Length: 339
Image (cartoon, rainbow, N blue to C red; front, side, top):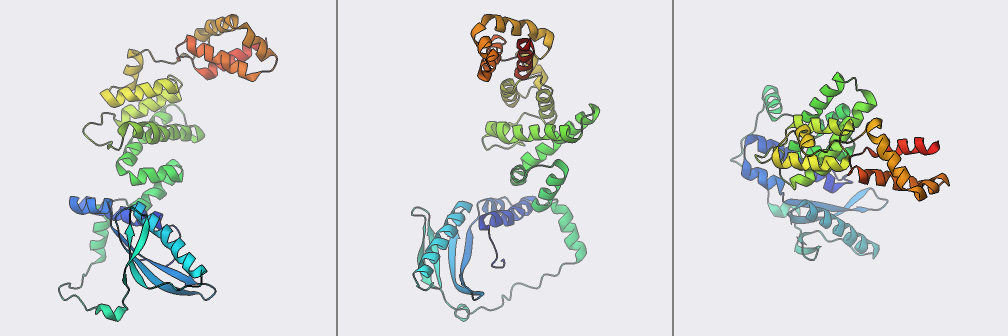
């Protein structure tokens, strides 16, 4: 039950529902957990009497069986009630149901007043007396709840709200991220990487977890028996990308192999010859050959056509089968062509 001041109803019910699901899952009640993950909602809408500061008539919407249904029903009621008030008509106190196919609410019955319900105390429910000690013990057993996790992730990892919400909603993925981050922070410390550069490493890890890895999972969990990537191997994978040892294209291949076989990334890179070529000595002859074989783009670049440079980079990438570091190639081309 909340005050009538909710501005983001869908976000609110998701936030209110998640701690309950975590608590029930902690208790091991699988049936109740399933019910909370796939919740059933009722909500009351109250029109507001303009300029009076008073609430208008209550309308109750029953048995909304998903977050999407709740969102759609709220949107529909806002439009329906606004239209009635705009036409000078009255809002009827009633109970309405949600038609998922037609995406509209339908009247079910007129709403009774409070005295019609004939409320009376439940004699079989005794007073529940909880000591502060008992409450604290329960709090410690449950562990970290979503809002506390949001605050901590913001403070410790400086993540954006969107990324934080993904890790909060998907607790297993969030825990995997933290384990991998612990490895990355240790690696960064050993290599004198800190501040903004460390933030870049963690952001790289976040991006690959949320996009590429979740794409491979297709809704499966990172704690399932079939999930073969360890946080340690994932952290190593991120360091290899950060150091420029593999290209973004090769990274997708490596992650796919890690997901399918559980191999460590270094072994996959060596096995499939995916290491990115970044050394000037290795690339110098390739770059000179590209310049020699493509006189027209070289001439165009000399005339100020920047897209000609990108063409030459593409040729070098083709010659090296995508293994050259494109940024290194680009800088080498600029340096040589400037002469």
